Length: 158
Image 1 (cartoon, one colour):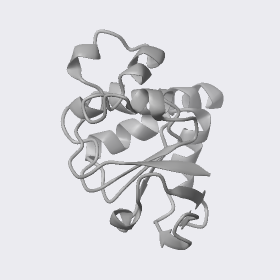
Image 2 (cartoon, rainbow, N blue to C red):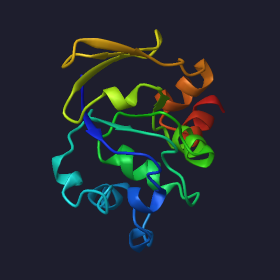
Image 3 (cartoon, rainbow, N blue to C red):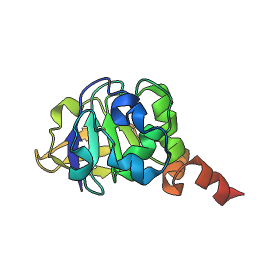
């Protein structure tokens, strides 16, 4: 079960992790500052297994891998959005962050509890007692996430 933290459209990588923190790639340090410019207390409120739900074009802006690393290191298990910026989409799987595209994110509220059937493509909103469908991610992409990202996947296959 995942608690929802809700954000809107066009959340760019500078909002996810501000440029002033890019002097490190330490996931623990990045996690302390994730989403800070949108919600200064976010990192202290988020719990392991929680999820971010957003609108369109999540992760737009620069191509930094720091953004999905910071989200994952903060304990976020999945980001659900209507759409993702292309480079963020790729960086997320490369770093092992699970992301899902779902057109009904407007119906999900902050604080809702979700249960996700990844292989079945169903998000169950336990708070509102309803379901949303998403296109299941390809098996290879699931393998990347399970391995913790592309580098770990490559190491495990060599």
